[in-house]
Image 1: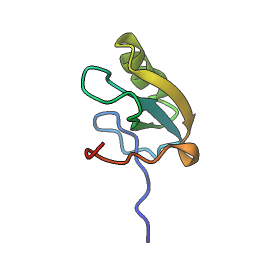
Image 2 (image 1 turned 180 degrees about the vertical axis):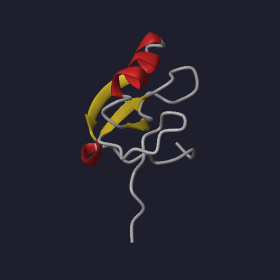
Image 3 (image 1 turned 90 degrees about the vertical axis):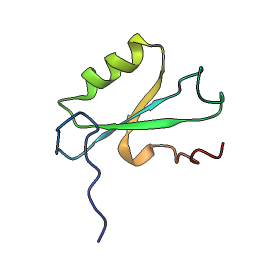
Length: 73
């Protein structure tokens, strides 16, 4: 059985429906994609946090989220 994907907002236990794709250019290579998951309630809050730092690249449905290759990149 696969565990449900949960929202990345602190303390939230709701199922994720959105993937927020981001990259911190000071830490990650340009092709690296990190992902936070969001429920409907926290989508704007999490996107605002990443957007204010100019990290947010895209918001897509959770089933379209890119696979993060991990820290070896």
